[in-house]
Amino acid sequence: MSISVSPTSGAAADAIEVRDSQVHGLGAFATHDVARGTILGVYAGRRHTANEVAARDWDHALTYVFGLSDGSVIDASDGGNATRHLNHSCKPNCVAYEVGEGADAAIVIEAKRRLRAGEELFLDYQLDVGDDRAAADYPCHCGAPRCRGTLLAKT
Image 1 (cartoon, rainbow, N blue to C red):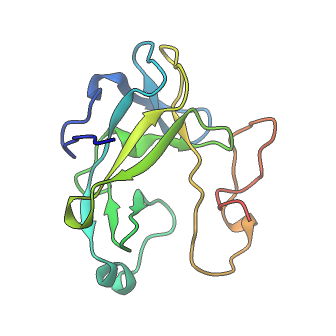
Image 2: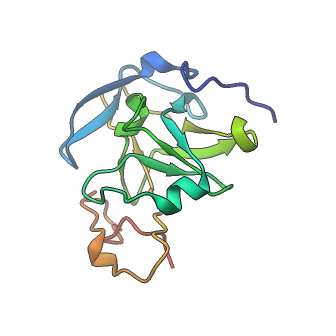
């Protein structure tokens, strides 16, 4: 399957509204009903190479960084769009996946199921912080019935 996306446009850019979230800070919300499988947007921001990532002192208090398979990252705090405001949930209603390769790689956000207008959009961050930090260092506040209590990936 081939998906053509532009980091600046997104397939349904008008489908996301940013406003206060009861889960954390700002959140992204569906502006109208959205069908399962709809591409909601492309995660946009400044691209950092793997070498730049290793040399950078990231602000761990608030980041909008999405890792790519080649070790580079997209930093949505610099040139990002509304997709950076999808909060974490242990029971997400959206999924993010990589399309393209190398410098053309992008992260696409897609609806996992039918979404209702006004519903907050969530991803499972599945964080991999590269060391043995405790799950308590990355607490989850999603409120899902089977919340695993952390933003870290399942072990």
